[in-house]
Image (cartoon, rainbow, N blue to C red; front, side):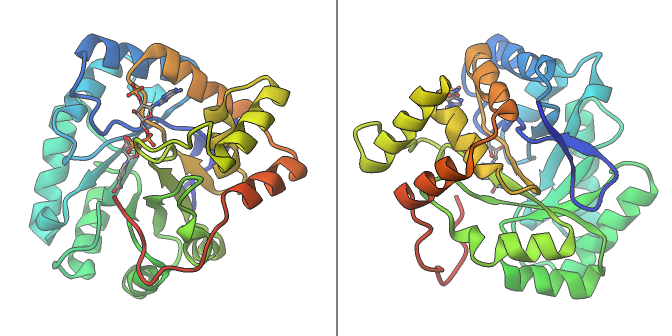
Length: 279
Ligand code: NAP
């Protein structure tokens, strides 16, 4: 597994992390085992949110006795993101995760509370040692500009956004903005949630050819493509140990410039959309 500095923080984080949306819906034991296998294989970055049902409880079981191995991220819902509500939501998440601190705490998407209120709460949580850093999710470049005027340089650890082979909108403005300001880009739904390219499609065939030649899986090629930029961190969700192990192995895969160019052609970036796509 390769590790990279996470935005402006002083922490090195695994380039492939672990998502947990819907992880509470299936077999609980299997979900815990999957997360633990992921940790064993170096996928230290674990992403969750107060919105994800009981996912925080599943994580609490998985990190029991190994909290220090994980880079733990959770998110506050916009409807809770007032100055007081953000702090209460964070304390609730800490309790559910059975930990005393988060490594990063994110605003899930921008809502109606002023950003200055949420940022003030984040800074208060940092001072209290309850979070080590903070960031945002689903912010377009314009939203990031607005946030920067409120927070100042060096404060935003990451922006977590939708990014997969068939949805490359963030490459137009979000990735360049984050690169310029030292903000990590966390790629959510890196397999398209439930829409991974079919092997019979034109793009899927290209993916298959590259994977076969390299002796890896198509999903590993997809993750390596997304992580090709030095500040992008994909976070696939896996509910089995087998899937977690397959995803972790992508953390050692580096694609050649030719393979990247072939994938770039097979899954074109497309024009810049009017608004940032999100799930
Ligand atoms: P995803 O990671 O793109 O895809 C998950 C799907 O891929 C599941 O059906 C999973 O099946 C399957 N899968 C995983 N590894 C596999 C493998 N090696 N082989 C075959 N299938 C595999 O979707 P996602 O859960 O939407 O996104 C990942 C994470 O991003 C979320 O869990 C969440 O933490 C975060 N997220 C954030 C936002 C936001 O607004 N900030 C929005 C969406 C997601 P199994 O479950 O059976 O393994």
